[in-house]
Image 1: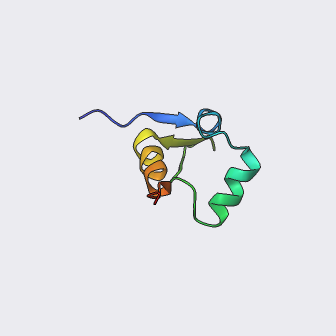
Image 2: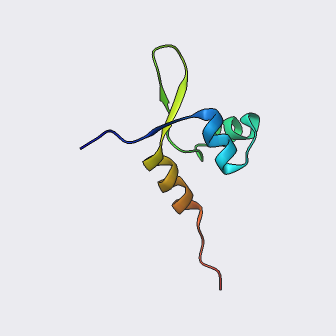
Image 3: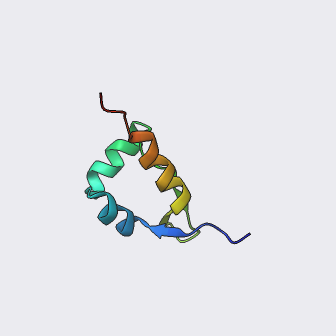
Amino acid sequence: MADAQKLKLCEVLEEIGMSRAAFYRMRARGKAPRITYLPNGQIRISRRDLDEWWESLERPSY
């Protein structure tokens, strides 16, 4: 099975429409998708983790 697609932080921020500062505030509260640090310090987020995070935000409307 192939590894899940890894997205750059800038790609994730563009997709979710959020600033870097807002993302880090959410991360500090434990509310952001899981991240992976590369050896050079860059951040990657797997497509699977981002999709699961989006699903966790969905709330049924009544």
